[in-house]
Length: 568
Image (cartoon, rainbow, N blue to C red; front, side, top):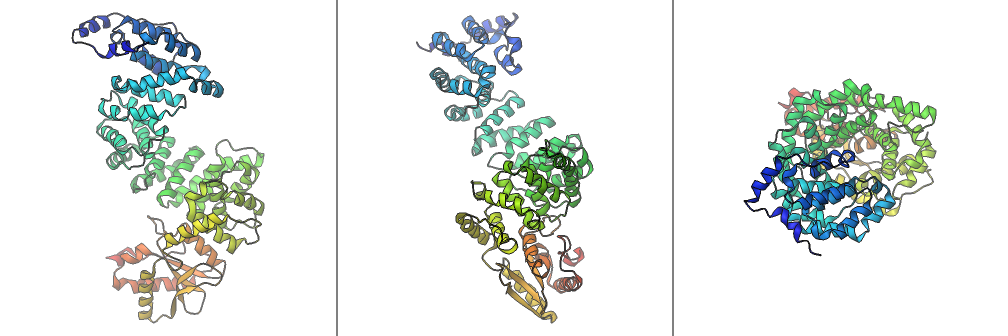
């Protein structure tokens, strides 16, 4: 049979428009089956009689709507193939996606392997030029409901979607959501085209939040859209719910671009409303602060205290915490350790993870072991450490955290060499290469600044040594003062807003403090901002602090920032 009638609906002559207008004055025929269909499906199949130019098209839609099983729809695709219109093809795939039977994995697998279903998809690919934007959106949305990434159809509709006018923002968001689900993250022209449309459109606040989340999952940063959205969100942030605020914070840090003002506003929201927020929303906010390397101590402490309540209750009852998954608990531990914040949540979280260690994936295991190294909890939770350490390198999650994995290996040699487990050789070799690239070699990561500090100390008459290797460690101290175990470190791994050391610098300080060293950190950014006449005064401040400081200092105490007036 031929599919010639499929073209009839889309080849209307000018004189056919009068027929359409007359037909639109009559009430559309309603099927008794339509009440049980989703609203999105009813919107497509009953738009009004003006679309049913041919009565056969309307009759085929009614026959499809009466089908209650996929087999009935597939049978119609074969027995009535010669009288199908393009509109009926779209209705057929919508009916298939709305049936309850396809929610069963076995029935869905049977449907996707059926040659009649493949025939439907090939017909849709063939008649893509006949479809409008709404019809193509319905198709990709149905494929998402069926969990079928049919790339031939997705790719075929990329250019037609850009050429067709978009009728509504909600339809556009559904279309983009389906393409993001299908893995089309690298289509720069496609997402850039619709980002420009949404930038110029008057969006509702919910639509703006959804658009920000969608574009955060693409490979290219849509600068114009995100900056316009930031200004709107800063103005309307009090109107957002805590859940929406957490989604916005995480989305704006996906491409690692600076949106500090918005994140600072979200931090204020977390600080005030942490006890009333959902723990999952707090985790997203802390993850955004961690990703952007912005230190908001009050907000982080408030979020950790709020999350410790349900976690402590679940640990006491020996039941899984419904509000926090093991991955969320690992994210909380890493966020606290990354910024060097001491919290009571660490002990409770480690005890909780010890009871649910089988549910901890590899990435969460890396985060938890790293937090244990930073906080010195390896001795008190040796059993949990062993189980989590064996997960590192078992999958592929370690490849995205090569520097972190190598830091864990160094921590094993320096903190817990007694552990009866070893990292795989491929993890160590690849991690060492990434660590060296991150630091610029095996020695001091900032030799030029260290030489400048040494010259200033020499002019001040302070006895010191530069580039001193610490025995039995991979570290090299930048400047050692006198013959005591006191040193200065020049570091660029600091928080962008407070210049306090974070991450790997804190871990290095932890390892050196365990060996009796007293350290103060010189933020590289602060040193380079200082004029030559103020550097000696700044070093005098550091030397006074180094002489009066204790051996173990917190993250905020190992940094002495110069007075802002010295930079003028």
